[in-house]
Image (tube, rainbow, N blue to C red):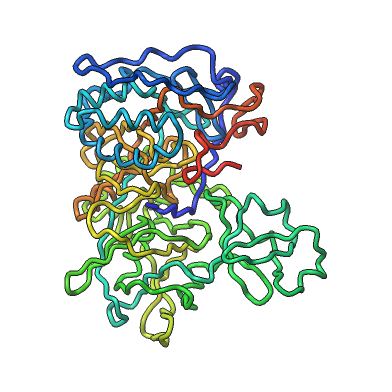
Length: 531
């Protein structure tokens, strides 16, 4: 939430075989006709729709189109499983919440959201008619043309804590460090050279045309590009100053063993494991002894890769199949996962000592080393977290003590109707119909959701993470949720979407040949960063 972006992972599946030429053209054949509600008249659509840019792929006209990560194929609403049975009134408040942001994203959304205000929000038939009239449905497939992906769940945890340090509350919950600096990865020179850089406020600016002798000049710092990870989703590189050098920001181990004196301590909690889970969830509630609740939300992260220590099965393989690509990690699903999900129980543990969170089965950390708290001597008898994952999330106090936590899209999340997605393939704020199974029972779980959040573990085209809310039942469902699923994104008719610059790009298994494929479905500030 801003789940973080707990931007710790990124995905780059490559496509299978050749079906590319037609999909890249954005194309020729018209989509199947959308069904129209027979129980409610469609909303007024008299206002003219703006003309899309020349040569663009257009939602409602293009049969199929492509990005680096996904392919999108038009389908009729009748072909979406469960579409006719969903209670759309449950998703309507979340959609209207997204509209408050989307109206600033272009004329298409401004007009659609204006017409949404005239819809009876209590009538599921009227809402269904609105979506069928205003949107086109496109099934999302990954870059190997597979329709199935992974659907997991997350929640807003609540843990005990205190404002002041004192046993058992000895683990600090840090705010964003004041000494953290940022560089735009897209503006860094290629290669692993050493360059001179200047710091302006919190921004690091590379100075071109300077020799190594100039790097010692006042106001200049040395930046070694060989140690920089450039593939964070938001393209931000997190740095710190040490002497005349700019170095990657501290790892989790460094933060826990050296402390973070440049970061405000928001609270102290008694469990390092619970704090780690809260960092993975991206938000949480800290309950004080007097009953007060301090609500925290994602603020920043340290820029280090997400490398959770996974629990091991009897055969020595990780209980959570994953694929690692550079500094990125992708959650996989195999045939054995369904049994794990059903057997995980209320606590979400797959085996003794394991922790299930956001689809990952983590090994319980072994405490080690002393905890260092800024301004206090380390107590040798107090063990450190023992968590080996180098990534670390910093929080901020949330302003609203009620309602759902605010997700990456900047609006409160709705339990059961908000999802976290990979914004490169599923733009934030957009409606997404998800077909999967209910955790535990295996019953169909088919409903319209709104993409309002991101997450470090949420990478891939066919990838969704249900927000279950807060409380014990939400925690149980979220920890058990790891199912196969399919996604259909709803795009406003007339919206210009991803288009390859050259229609002759060829796809082969494992890679796209040609640099003309866009990374993002709909490049827009705040929801996707394209190169």
